[in-house]
Amino acid sequence: QVQLVESGGGSVQAGGSLRLSCVAFGYYSRYCMDWFRQAPGKEREGVATIYTSDSSTYYAASVKGRFTISRDNAKNTLYLQMDNLKPEDTAMYYCAASYMDFGSAAGCFRAGASLRYWGQGTQVTVSS
Image (cartoon, rainbow, N blue to C red; front, side, top):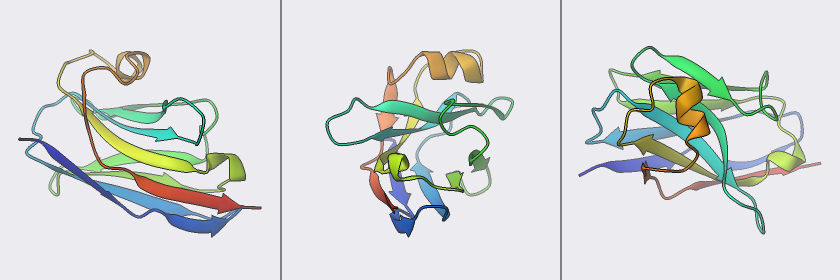
């Protein structure tokens, strides 16, 4: 049974940084691991993905250059380093892991929220 447990959310001022963590219990596939987010009244959107077979990454245009996704294989933990945070980054952030191989980081990202295990979410609030 796969269980994803996120931590690290919180409240920061614009320009600040946070690092989210996600421990992936029982997940040993070499597929996609992702961060998604959902703001109130908006659809869930992909933020960043890592294709664990080759550690390649893909980012949403809105976060590219500010966020960094990484994975520590020894700890089976996914991270999202978020720098230069903006108020529009305020959302619930979810860790996800796919149970299908999409072939590449870009393929993972294009697949959206399909065929994923999900964490419970961690709130990020950025004030101006």
